[in-house]
Image (tube, rainbow, N blue to C red; front, side, top):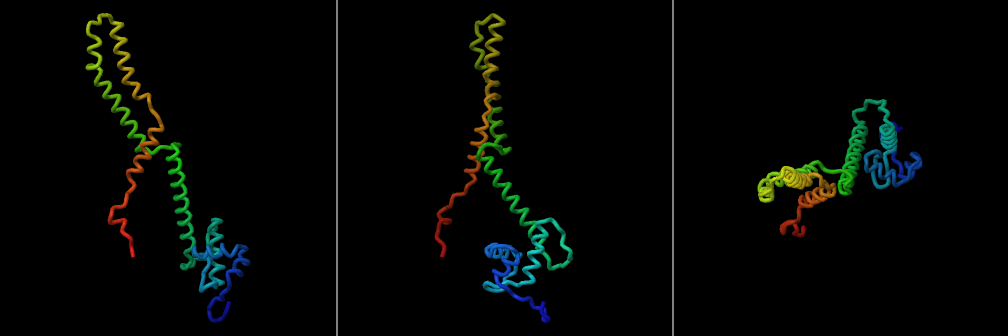
Length: 190
């Protein structure tokens, strides 16, 4: 280190060799704030080495030996990693929803609400629907058979669960949430 507290600068090539990385990776690390770029093609050597060591420690789950208040890479990388994990999980869930491998609870609820409403309507309409068929029927077994058939027909509504309907409902809900531009929104800028 020099006496005047200024850190020497170096090239991306030297840092790449020092860290055993490609030059492109060193540049990516600069964008992440791990290595410190001072000017075009030049990097602060000590800050970059310190940043890279801390970056590797964070990735390995090792606590920093210093309590340097300027050492903020740890929180940044933890939060950034958590953000990327959340984005990846969200994308994975979205793909699984679109494939119908998992279902959104609101879509399942809507499909079941519709099925139950339809079954309820059929059950409530039984007296009106069945009464004319029972006119003149005197045998208990025949009345029972007519009523059984009518009740089973109404209850069949509940046995017709189709997971594809849930996926279709999800897709329709997603499409209805897509905002289309208005005339004012489509104006060119600049």
